[in-house]
Length: 402
Ligand SMILES: Cc1ncc(COP(=O)(O)O)c(C=O)c1O
Image 1 (cartoon, protein in one colour):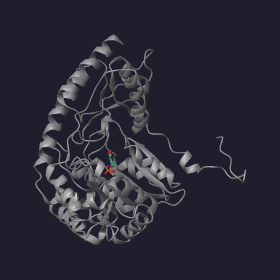
Image 2 (cartoon, protein in one colour; image 1 turned 90 degrees about the vertical axis):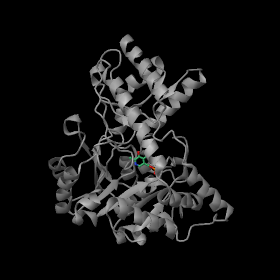
Image 3 (cartoon, helix red, strand yellow; image 1 turned 135 degrees about the vertical axis):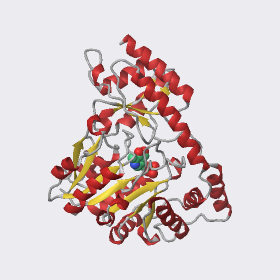
């Protein structure tokens, strides 16, 4: 570190931030950028965002908000009253959950409300239980606040789900909360009502909080059904922060709107954190979000259907490749094949295999170790069918040559 501080005994930067890894997705993007500059014809199956455009009615609502001059800070900072009302109605209508609008905070994406909750809950040394494979940001957000992520490994054998027994064993007097993500990024697994109920019993006994990340709720495939743990067990519902947003269901990643709903005391603290951090998310985006919830839901279904066709194609193609096995994801838009049988002299691990596919198949994917599982790769199928077909042809060919 070349930067010097006035006081040589004080490290120049925060140790908490220095402890956070650069995400493997970011590293993969950087490598892909380099290859593109060298003229490679790359296919990217890396992105964590729908390749569809934001629905027209949602865009129009934002344009109207601008025309009407709704371009100031949001009052109150926790979200437009009409939006929080629309979210409360959605949670009642679709999830059978009762929240007052005052129990809802609208944030710059689901990512922010999760981080705000971590800030509100974690004291240095506190533990948060996160099942692996996990979405990249959870553990680092806990580390940033001086907490200790306790990683609970799961495997294909349990359908990548935490078992109540494993959860009970992981809980200690320092456990503050458990992070649940169903449908899951990266595995696409969905917890059934019964599986959530069994976890909820353990959580209620321990009296810990739950952060339930339900951002992929609407990208779910028959016969799987989405359930929120908040609705499964009343004792757990009052200790749950339900997290959702607009990025995935309405193809609104760039608009930055997410929300949390939970017990009043926790929500007041989350609102306090947000008020010192971003004040509010973009007011114009919030008007768009009201239309997303209250307007036609046709585009949600169109996208879901398209994702299902792509899922069926990519999983069938991956399973035909020697050394590759892939479970059928029930939600989200990622295939997460086990590729550990391919490890040997030529490629020794997931990072080397992802690099090999980038060089030899000109196809980008994310190594599973970024999500806590070195046996897997993550392929996003938020890409067109012809692109997925071409990518699978290239990968099959590259693996046959390996
Ligand atoms: C599991 C999961 N949670 C939260 C987010 C963040 O979503 P947002 O764009 O609303 O911040 C993502 C985005 O990739 C995600 O995959």
